[in-house]
Length: 157
Length: 316
Image 1 (cartoon, each protein chain N blue to C red):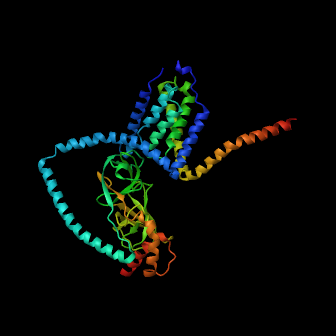
Image 2 (image 1 turned 60 degrees about the vertical axis):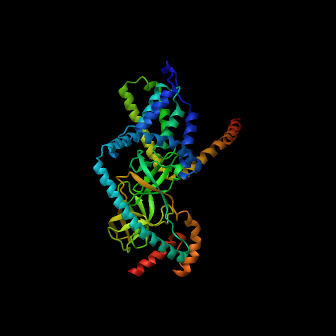
């Protein structure tokens, strides 16, 4: 079961266009996140093709289209796709109503994390320094591992 | 069947993507050049989508134009012609005044003002945002529209270019909560920062209590922020809130630009005093200080406001 890439890309662009449809401000809030739903559908039913990277690219396009913080929706889309893909075998056979309920649940998580990141975003400049700490942890781990495993082996005797 | 294949994604890929996203967010916040290039590149595609969605509206309008009566059109042409003559007549006076002002300024500090070059642009779309404070125009990189360029309409300041792509540009309105600009308060010569609130109102906070300002006064751009050239009308004061304990007042203002009915806007692509401000600041200081004010310890940013302030107190 493979769908052509053409269909996946075309539906994604259509969903993006639906998202960008100008609506009155009061309606705008209630406009469903079409691109997110499309992304969830493809990662549920065509996981071999539409994986995390597809979700990331879709999120990035949404960021660019809505002039938002670049990478915010990319992050959230990737995390949602990860959730969906890990729960896929349960979600795929669930009845439509419970699927919809679970997707509403995902959306709640999505919105909460989004809200949190927006709040942190004012300090994202300092976030870069935090990020560099993660990288230095990455570099330091082999050293710590080597030293401590040696120590553990020595103290065993 | 595909359902029984576990397509459980790898943690490594997730972590790599998460790290890339966070890095992208922080680099975007800092304003790195290649991130904005990425934004501009991809934005060309999405702006195309926005434009395509807006196309039915444009077509409906142009179809509607076919059915306008000839009489109405002729009346319109007549009215516009009269208005044009009127404006040209007034303009002659302005040109003469401009020359006079330039001469006086040249005598004062050796810097003449220039009329900025403006570019007429049409609104082509309306990307979604929670506050609805963005719109796209049909001029972009090719027409020298750069992020940060001021946007005005026939009445006053509309906003600034947020992002410009190959095919168009996105404008952020001055009523947005993310927008702030420096203004001169009426005739007082004092400057303040005017901030958008997300709805129609604008707020200037921390204005000294003794400022002689009243509802109805016009707020104009000060030029200090180097984003907007000096002297464009921005907003009209509608209310003043007292803050007795602090000794400051807070001004509530409404933009003079017709933000509800924006069809055409003007982009100031080459603000004459904005880029030159940095280089001129040093020479201004040395020229102005001995003449106008005794040595003050005001910083360079306040320097341009000082002559106006003293002039205003003389009038009072």
